[in-house]
Length: 146
Image 1 (spheres, one colour):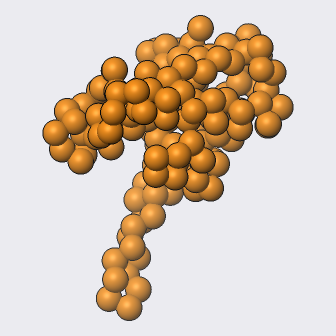
Image 2 (cartoon, rainbow, N blue to C red):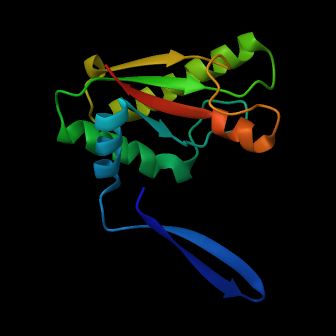
């Protein structure tokens, strides 16, 4: 992803902000979708809930732009969790989060027939669940080209 980090010092505190470049992020999503067949989205949700946090709305907007740019593109929205909690509750949580993302995309005007939602729970980790960093990577939503 094209970006730059800007650091600011205010009253002795260092703040870092991620600044997206002028390159459209939907363009980056499109490139990843074409090369890998899927894109990992780091959408933030309320803890143990499927409520999308407001700071993740721009990610939904980028997905909508991607889908508007290619009206032939159909995707599966797939939720994943770490291994904290029971497998059954993680499966349900991941399904609900995938549906929440799908509904947010539909609310922005994308036809439901182009989308599906699936929850994998903790079944497909991409990192080791032994560390917080690994668990954070496993808590994700992916859009997969159908």
